[in-house]
Image (cartoon, rainbow, N blue to C red; front, side):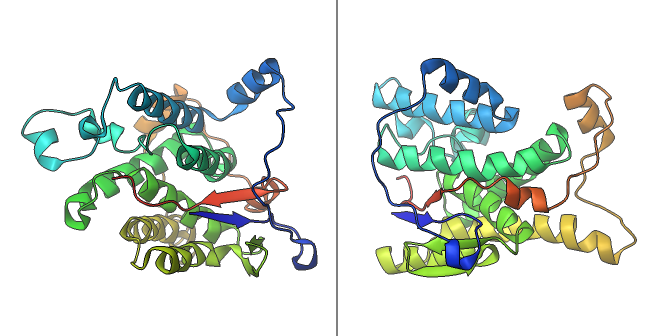
Length: 265
């Protein structure tokens, strides 16, 4: 399913985005430039997602080679599953396009507003390791949607004043976004989406210790990346101060579509 949202405009100006097919307007050159303008982590994730979908579509790979299994990874040494579970959203389909668009919006906005590549990659590492740890308990084989839900939750909490429109019927502020999507999923599928709930839980832990905890504990930031991690990504360069949270909202495009699709089986 697809949840269709408006942008961060005032309530009276917030308009929904409908899925209207428009002819392509960008040239190949401009599309290439746009691709390389993406921040590096988002670009790698997007590229891996597209390539994985293509390989499955061409029957070079199968979903059975990509899902996460504790036994397959640690007993059969199939270590690629630690990453492939986060980049497979299904073969080429509208479902896959929704997820790519989803990554382009929320992962990109979080990365562009992060203090540095090291800081955002540290967030991704935390989310990936946390989701892998709870996957056997929650019985999840594919974790891409769960990782996306984690990033959506963090973005929504950091942009409390952004207004969104859902299907042109409901207008709400960004912190309600994860819960609106969950409610829509329940109505559409008749069950609670455990992938999104796990994503919210992992995202809230990060948000609390990164955005709330420091203000009540003398500025101590337990979720900041260690210096060795910063040196690994930036070769010892000092990270610039994090931008103001308003930049998150400013990064919103005029139309934002957030897909909430069934789990990949």
